[in-house]
Amino acid sequence: MLGVGSTDGKGEWRIDNDIETQSVDNRPAVELSLDIKFTADQEQAVNEMAKETNFILYQDEEGNGHQMVIESVEHNSLGHIHSIVASDAGNDLINETVGAFKADKPYTIADYITKFTNDSGWEIGINEFPDNVRTLEWTDEATSLARIIAVAKDFDAVLSFGFEFVGTNLVKRVINIRHETAGDSLISFEMNKDINNIVTHRDTYDMETSIKAYGAVPESTDGSTNKDPINLIGYNWTDPTGQFVLDQYG
Image 1 (tube, helix red, strand yellow):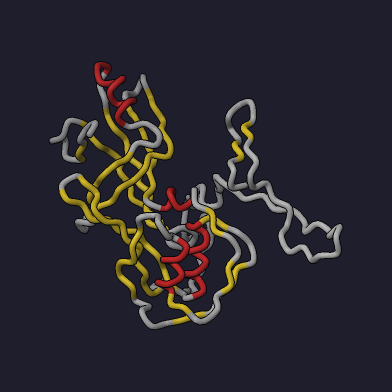
Image 2 (spheres, rainbow, N blue to C red; image 1 turned 180 degrees about the horizontal axis):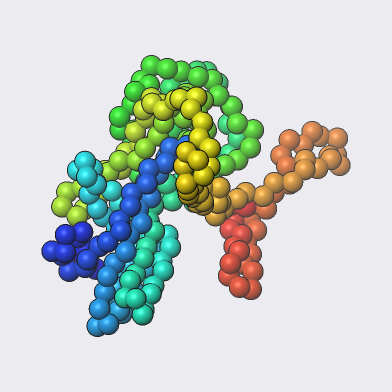
């Protein structure tokens, strides 16, 4: 553990302007933004403690535990403010890719989510759709996160991530499946009349960190019928900058 902060000034680090944003429209995630105050003597320590890809453990107002990963940092040396934005869970599912899939029979939403998050460490938590079944199909590949969101939309469900801690140790990660609660109120507002400001938010929901390369199905030269498209399986390559890597799995 690199440090402990609090909003009441009792911890080693003072936390201000902490805002928790929950999103269910495009990504089942919780985003946390906050400012960490520091002195000149603490500048190096705060940079090491709260840097990109480091984790944060915190408890919300309802007593729910969260594990977050820091996605962005803004460090103000003159103002002695270290600002971070962190988001929960879904990041590790962005790194996993799933292919096309056609169900052979109707399955529950838990069956689909378990399949597309296999070996990720996530379990099904609250499930308000235990008996509903669908026969679903996807013709292209996607990240695990995008796929389970697509599953939820087909079931008219909302996903959220939950965590269980023993002390500061994360012991369980769950995906909760709930009914959609929001609805269209049919109320409209006019800018500069009913409201005076609109704040928009953009995130990295559509970001992909890995893809599989496929080409066309080649014509046969011996009269047989080819079914497999051209691919890069078995090849290895890394570009000179190290930014792009092709592994043996294509």
